[in-house]
Length: 161
Image 1 (cartoon, rainbow, N blue to C red):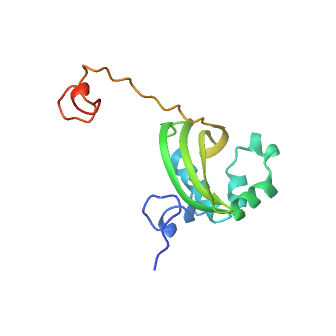
Image 2 (tube, one colour):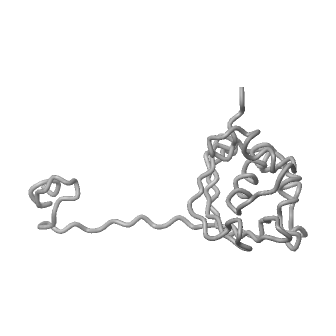
Image 3 (tube, rainbow, N blue to C red):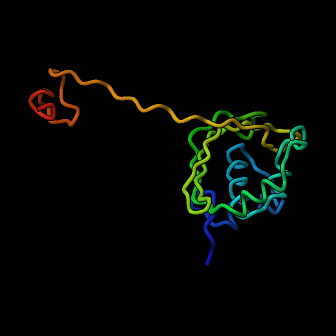
């Protein structure tokens, strides 16, 4: 039985992120590196997280804190929201993602816009910034506007009663 990869591609771990984490190959794109780093958190492979951090940013790496977060969280899924550049022929890229996890049975999400750079042919995580939730917006419906429920009636004759 094959174990599904934590990164959510639908592939088996052995065919997806494991070869990157074990050093058998390097990531081809920034998104692939992002996915493998998520899998490394899920599998508590903090050495890989350190090794795939850009060398210029390793001084700030908190190995103990990273390990504690990885060990004490139940990783539930990764959603790639958007990517900008970061392809095989690029030297930089951005990946916006949402990582879902549980911390002491409280469901949490980590929403980040991460920067990646290619150095000597290999992709590295450079830095990330949290993405604040967008405020909910609602358009005010006028009494004579079409009803947003899709009935085709005016709002005042339908849901606006």
